[in-house]
Image (cartoon, rainbow, N blue to C red; front, top):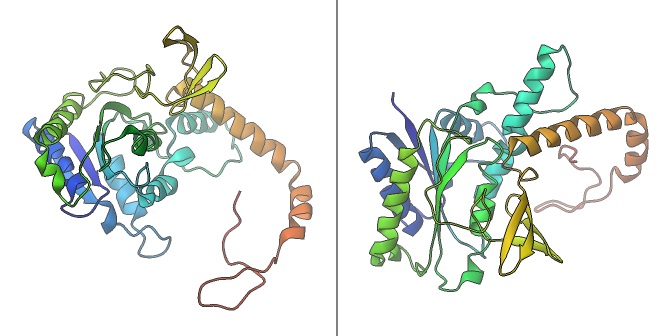
Length: 307
């Protein structure tokens, strides 16, 4: 099998987001990649014997590139896409954490952190994002791409192109926008051109943005201090622009995520030393009455403890 591009369609079957994704996949296929399309709606994501999260993980871990196409709903992406990310990604798929745990094993250590170690995460991958919305004004689309970045940074997947479509507010209406359809094909070709590359050597081919790492324009202002709201790079306002002074805090960087791994291990160790006190104080909250659909008020919960 050659290089593989995984397409994840997060909208209605046959809808505008899927149409754009198919254009991108066709372009990647024309460049020689093997492609496949998975519909988010076909995945069962409730934990249990019929859960498809593990199946999708194997599709993701076996690919060289990931193209995600999602409709924009309430300024951001569909909630089920976030559920998928929460189930599979984050610390459990963080390349820096996996490298840290592998190094700890070599030293004979066993950090008390409950993360899986799948060395296949360290394989180089690239990604492209398509966000498709109906609104013609920017404020209704602001959060879509930043949330999509949360699906790639942990695995150190290099985002090489990203696009936002406007005006596709009725089913399949994106076909009335030939420029958007052509742009999706360009995105697919751009992704295919970077296959085999990783975070350090992939070339970004999408539209420029303020942040030099995620290439987006969403920022947090603290006086004259600037923080990229998507990835955490730091800078200062200078004139009409931003001078980026410190890229190391960006969650895209392995340096920052390695520091985060050390923080997690240190916190877990400190809490383990006070486990008895945690249990003693938490006991005061056990058995608080809850209400569930289709059931009378109960006094205990069957759910697993959460952080």
